[in-house]
Image (cartoon, rainbow, N blue to C red; front, side):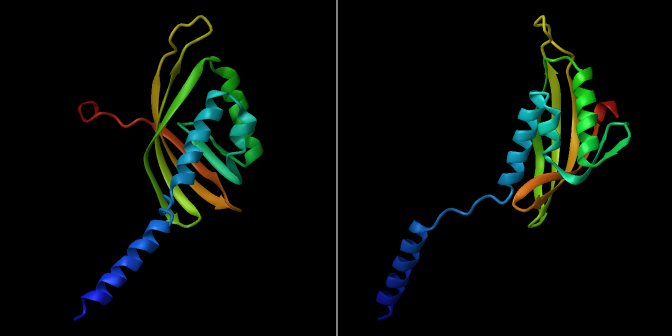
Length: 158
């Protein structure tokens, strides 16, 4: 009878899987990048924000010009943060995060900005969507290209 070998094989497979670590979500480091971006943005820290970009990164925000290279991106964010109310915050939600290859991914986000000014009054809220191309360089995920666009209009408003 063949029951004993089958039961033994099943027991070995079950015991092996008990000790095995669960497979890590391959997009988790990219999701962590989104969270870090939000935290640094909310601190209005242009230097730390620029560090989230690759050396050769570029960005286009809304209808503005293309900004290329980490130093230029840092200067752009310094000017942007200086021009906005100190209480402005951002809340990022990922609408999709996917790997294209082990070292390249695409992130699509929805960004809602708002917050409260120095007197505690609400700051006008706005919603945008972003597309990020991210790369893994030496174990660190960095933004290689950032595009920020107007939020998608509801079907009744198109």
